[in-house]
Image (cartoon, rainbow, N blue to C red):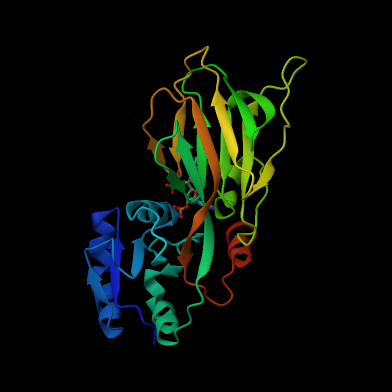
Length: 268
Ligand code: NAP
């Protein structure tokens, strides 16, 4: 039997929460785990819904690294973070009873805009121009000027986020055991006068990425942390790196990142 005593349930849709509440209460009662409202101290943070709900739950508790996250899906489809399904709560109960918890650690991204307090992403950080005009910025790796970028923007993803927006842009799928960020371009201009690498690249933890935004045009860049916009005006400098923090989820048999990748993309 596991040592978890309390669970905080995050359900962005009240309807979903009401629909699954009775079953969850019964389950957690049986496991002697109390459902609590205090998201700062709960041992478990459980999201109800798909991966979008899971991303919001992690943000809701400010990327706490002293709890375990679990996602309980309700829709009839496969997900990446939502490992359990409300129709198969016996699998979750079994994991608790057998104390089958060898938590997986997922790397996250730390972003600092204009020397403000750091903010975090579980999937990706995105910057793009909000006007019908290309954005220009200089990309530094450590303090080394790597390239002058001109295009729609860039996406910087975590390994678990590599199967999201990054994959749609042709980026590589990255094993979460590799603690790196992946930089992927959004429609870069490549011509006789402008040149970017043109492919995604990975940066290891000791190599932070810094973006210096060209101020000669007001691009009003949109900054996004996973599925939420970051409200910052006058963005000059953005520092992005692999965080020292991780989030932890439950590790179940036959449910590695690669099992999930196959389940989501390769099975009919
Ligand atoms: P959404 O726009 O409503 O849905 C995006 C889809 O991406 C959903 O099907 C979602 O799964 C799935 N997803 C989320 N994280 C994923 C991951 N790590 N690997 C594979 N699929 C993933 O937005 P949302 O549900 O709030 O999710 C936000 C994420 O959407 C962003 O972080 C970004 O990765 C992704 N996104 C993708 C594109 C694109 O591919 N063109 C554009 C913008 C954003 P669920 O159905 O389980 O929620």
